[in-house]
Amino acid sequence: MTRFERIGAAVIGTGFIGGVHVQMLRRLGVTLRGVLGSSAERGAARAAEMGVGQAYADLDALLADDGVDVVHVTSPNHAHFDQVMAILAAGKHVICEKPLAMTSAQSARMVAAARASGKVAAVCYNIRFYPLNQQAHAMVRAGELGDIRFVSGHYHQDWLAMPTDWNWRLEADKGGALRSVGDIGTHWLDLTGFVTGLKAEAVFAELATFLPQRQKPTGPVETFSGATGASEPVSIDTDDAAMILLRYPGGARGVMSTSQINVGRKNALHWDVAGSRASAAWDSETPDHLFIGHRDRPNETLMRDFTLMNPTGTAAATLPPGHVEGFADSFHGFFRAVYTDVAAGGRQAGATWASFEDGHYEMQFCDAVLRSAQEGRWVRLNEI
Image 1 (cartoon, rainbow, N blue to C red):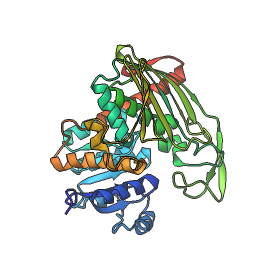
Image 2: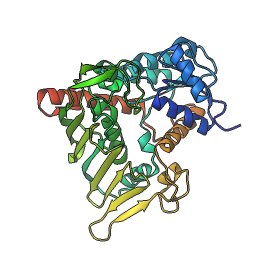
Image 3: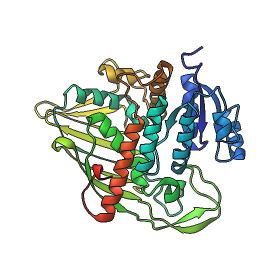
């Protein structure tokens, strides 16, 4: 029996990301009790496709299963609040996809409920668990970059670049008022905050919607699958792209952009951190290499090699050097860290997974970005 086999899990959501959760739970050795789809019929069909033995009829049936210890929430954003609050009330641990909620008012209540429950409550910022991001986090903590001065980068994709591209995230009532910022910008924000230890205290933002009308399919469309068949024109008011200036405590500054319409950029998250002693940079499309910049000696490119990495980076690596660890592996590392704490009874010292408090901060950031774009001014997060 594996060390996690005694822990039972269920997954809410059977789309693209729900399938990734199912795969990585199996790899980790967690006992997968079942899945819950958007309808009983869809859940049963997807469970059969994925080889999962049980599809719950509804959330009540899932929560009534005493064999479920941890619930993974991968449903559309608008469903997170009610589902998570019910899961915590039922006395179960929860791992929720990002963004945590639709608004910071909701996420504040989720933080309070998580604290009161005493259960492990994690937000799925899996990108922290690429080993070289763990490496960079430890480098900054050790002072290897010196004082952090400037943080820059972007998260660019192209999967919504065409008028016929469709996903539920395009609709504000399902995905939230912010799309590119809420969906992928929060990943960049969380990751750079994890690496640097800094959280932005004020933002100045501009949002852009380049495709104000799109063709919405009349049938369901899974994320990244592309739209086919009959469609109808609909108006869009969520952001295709965003440009955001950042102010950090202590004087550091930053700038970031998000886009889901940059043709040719499939999943390009890039961060660059400039410190007083050295700099570092990482790109998700070449995840096994970390740039380390110097002034007085040649720059370096650190390949993910546990014989060369610090203990934090080494602990996150699972494959030998030269065997690329990618997107799915980051979920495996994230789940391994969370389930280790579930087995221990709670979050342990030194844990590096994102908490509900982290998820709430990202929701405050989104609300500040929205207000800044609407009012054309710097907005401090403590205004939210």
